Length: 363
Image (tube, rainbow, N blue to C red; front, side, top):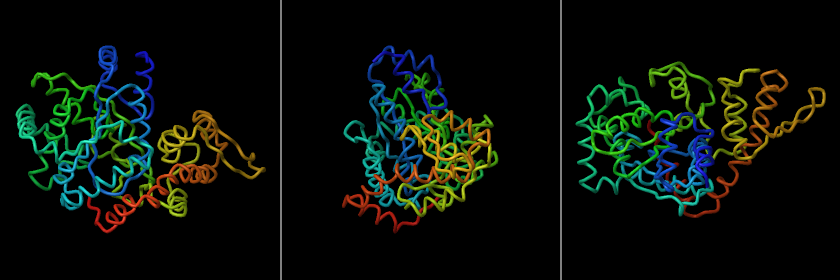
């Protein structure tokens, strides 16, 4: 596969930012199998950004020839007080997330699944954590707290200050060439790029994907990034710890319909509209089309085979929000059906889901 095709796969939506494009090109020109990674705190039920959007990007990375490592950041979740900091519960959630990946169509034999717990058993890893911390100031670490979904004023325990050093050390320890994470993780990736030369390591390329908006729509800026648009994205992202703003992969059609019909969806506005986002980043990449049923007096049924046509018609007022929502419910229901079926028919997955359902999900 030529470099241009690989570049297109890695940089296309939902990718939103690459630091830097020149470095990515140079990497692909010299490395047929660069190592890419994404990391996840096992911290609750899977929602569509985790199970669908990130699976779309993972496939792009694999198709581009990347060797991909999926880090189940159980120790990070413990530090961040997820699942009340209970490492055994966190481990169970991690096992559940592996089943979600399988249900989402990810061939786990084509990726390397790494547990932070195994990495933490190596004293060389902790030496690396300390060396990273020695190259950064306390102020710099505090600026990285948004990677944990927290702000400086939310710092609860001194242990949480280890988090940025651990995440940067992960990148170096795993031999990562490409950090393929959400925009909310950019401060950790930038810190890794700054520290890498000081530790005699190559700078990782940062490939950041779009943060899918929650059902309630855009939220006010929270100072999570210096760029106001990125700040809004991070502040408004769909959070699996806030059920009323999230679409979970286990939501029945009835629940899905209830949530989507209540969602923020201003007419003619496609810029800060979660329903439009789900069309762009989930439905069209997965299905390649969207069918909208309407009464004949309002123009009749219409089939969109590319997102830009839908966007244009919506901005012109040719599509009513209610009609769009109904179509999105149908499409998302079809996308999530195989995942729900997998968890109903697979004994291990079903038992894990039942176990996780008995846990209290903590932010």
